[in-house]
Length: 120
Image (tube, rainbow, N blue to C red; front, side, top):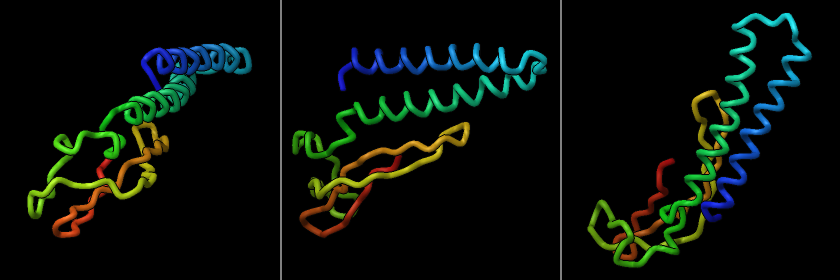
């Protein structure tokens, strides 16, 4: 996904927050400041997780297969350059208790067999 596509998607997420809050406010005309704040924070938490996930997945580091072999990380055990061995999903929880799923490359050392899966 390129920068323009990311911006379009994030703009839509922001518009959803604004329209959702306007609708929520109409449905809750006597809400307290705290209730309004909680409703807004819940919407921002969802948007934050989406933006964070999109930004992380757009990184070249998300897919070791695309990396130049000289730019790949080295094995912490023997120092050999790691090789890509498939991809796996990793689900993390962000601030606001929102799930975030990242597809990352499993890396294996061709010399000693040490396997690594990048952290979130």
